[in-house]
Image 1 (cartoon, rainbow, N blue to C red):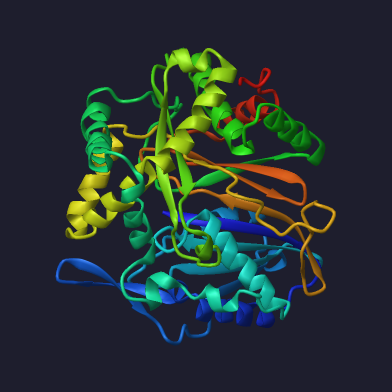
Image 2 (cartoon, one colour):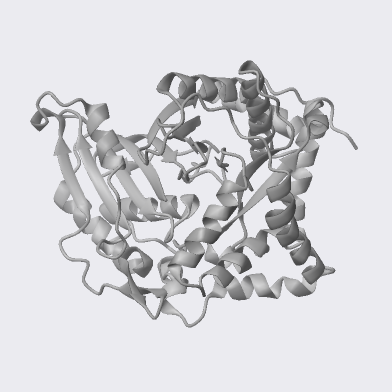
Length: 432
């Protein structure tokens, strides 16, 4: 699974300086310069002391002749990344013209989640601007440089805070492997079928004025912005299926939960757990009830250790040969443990705010960063995923999908429906 961060820049970008900035960031975060080796039926990471000439590729629209920009970027994003031979990171500087460029960062999901990918990108920009981080000593990647895994130790420390922890763990696994297999949730309607591994994505931008209205709704209902994103996603899936004469019973949406302690804010590797919350038609009949439910479910996931169960599960799986782990993952997909939509919610504003409270526009040397876009991983047979990020007052919502499962027209229709659900989400008076 691959994660993409796309930065649109206006102004000249020095490619030699950019390449050095990436190399310096890799030195600070060893997980970004590791490859995978197989030994004794297990996969082990091997750190590369010298990353070589770098992972930066430069392409110029003027040199592509008749090839369209969209086609080139699509082919770049669909290039496979072999961790046994390549580093888990590659970067493309695509020069659209003399003034405009796009920086495409590609991360393998085994080394960084969406939030940590953005932290790494910010580190590269700091290096490019010769602005050393105040937290430089904390930026060391703990999972590579220290014995054991401090995230796993942190998760274990939560057991004493959770009543009936093991009973809840067994219940979670029972529902994951038994109940979900016997009574699978409803999938999102697809208009095509196939097995292509290619990806495509489309984007909608919610302007600052509209975003402030959504934020005002969230404050009035005493919920977070993420809660509206998630509740609107359930409604969008139900309406989408209804438009195509498909009934929606239980719907589950896979969402990330940031469980890392405060001291891990500057660590790049994965520290986000995943949870899949279930809603019924009765939950979705009342928008205010649905909003309260998704907020309560997210809080319960952390309080009762549900968010940690997935970490334990995958650490347990890592003890098996890769072929066994692959089949276990395939079982989870086939039995529809999760709905297609993976919602990457706004885990926090991705860029520092200015003193006025607004998101600050960041520069790269003399160039200005005008937009930041995130793209979430898509797993077959999950056909689509949604990613949201906020930059400079704009809310960017991207939909990544497999064209073999969803046509371009249908993908745009679904994204438009979801954006409208977010903007028009009805929240009543807060319930005490």
